[in-house]
Image (cartoon, rainbow, N blue to C red; front, side, top):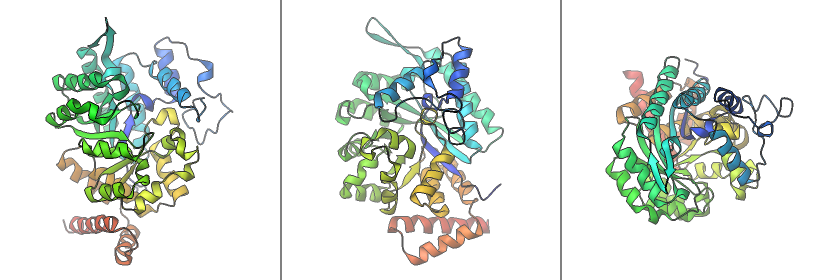
Length: 389
């Protein structure tokens, strides 16, 4: 084990959004589909050190162009075997960078639904074949890396209340042991969380933990509404910075925000394309549990190492704080308690003697928010137990 590596967690990655330009070209060739020359920058037109797997060509200030790129890339995925390729590619690349836990977002609607005579037809066989291929990819990555993976089911809110509910009904009839979470995603301003009451209730009945997209494009009030309907975590949630009372609630209830620095810089107009405007440092310092995520790693040209590096280089997160962010991710993971404890101990095993020294200093100096100090004391106590075992 290389203890100098910071172990990493991803709680927020859309599987189709993970497709890199290189993988998109591979899928297009495999499925005999035309690959638009304008889709990607050509060699020499981008920094290969920053975009190691190619770079899509779209105006980062134009949300419509981003969606068009996403749709074009997603359409290269035609078979269950294609899901093996993209799952293996994403997990193996990030596992090499220290990723120990990942939750992948799945949209059954995009995987296996078709429209016939104004009805949505769900293809059970295709769904099972797709998850079988994704499971196989996970197993193959685990042969080389110590990584745990779970799935999140996505209900796409801008497709309407009925589709979101039908998605969950489909999962009720087609359960999978790795499906542990439910997420309402898509256009945050399409409908109100109150509109999805039946879906909230069914998710609870199915014992699926809830992580709802809120407070990214929409305002802080959307986070309040997500919490009202039982969200255990919030996808993005950066607009919480607008409401101190909400921040206090997030801290007291230990609600974790799934922050994606690169994605937010590109998609959140309020940041004006400048990552320095991101409130991640403020949110952390106020005691809000946060994680760092890739969101749509392939489309945005990022990976988990890059996200942690941005936090360190731009927002001055220390190694101890990055370890804390990883442990926050494990604590908020939608995974069984025994595996959560194993992952916690795995992350703690990366603490060097200097990390432990910094941890003690942080506890003694009380320069952090009390919620952070509380976490630090918990880590210190567990480290002592591990030493004595």
